[in-house]
Image (cartoon, rainbow, N blue to C red; front, side):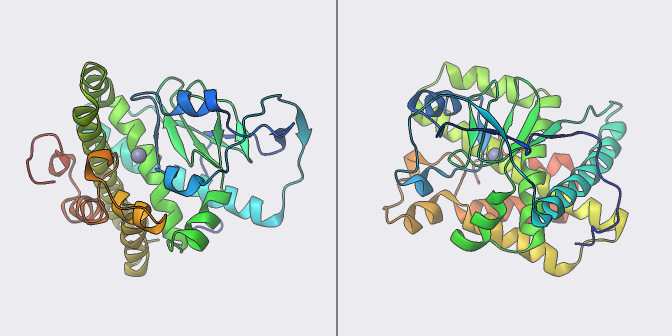
Length: 283
Ligand SMILES: [Zn+2]
């Protein structure tokens, strides 16, 4: 993806100079909060946790110097976010609506959110309460080094996926589905979660397709990087890589095959109507 020297988004809230210190990892309470039904829409990194949680809680802030790599990552995210804003503004205009963009919070290590603390243990996520995406760009390193999902466009896909949750929020889909989830059994709730996530993947595909056409900055290799990333973050693959036997009833994001399928469907169709994951038996 060509991104150097391109326009970035204004909707970035950069908290990377500040750090919640005092050993504050994501405590037991924080984890419960972020896993609270419907309010946490992230990449499922729980199989990666392996005792990385620590329960201490005092928050102190200290200045953290940014490296050149941090600055580059921030610039990349900002350009990608701007590209999502342009593409979704077009799509909303066609629906006779105005797209209100999300804010993207860049942080290092830990930062508070109304959906619970964001940290390396949570992975990137969208919080519908404040309509913000939370992202520690170190997650891109985790993706390429620990999850086998490298490449700049794998990172762009993660940004696009979280923005897609905001699009679902703006379209009223999240609220509707979450109200049903709150009255449902765990099994039904997980099934609905999978449908939300696969739709976000499909929306990410729409974005990739339209951004490729609109800006000419995305090539075929980029699309393959995103499709590979979707495979690496499927529930079954994550569980298997963590040494667990995949248990379909515990899936909340969909299998590798499903995530790839819906991402590609979005890329091929380029239309919101193609992403109806709620009206099909065939995920
Ligand atoms: Zn998601």
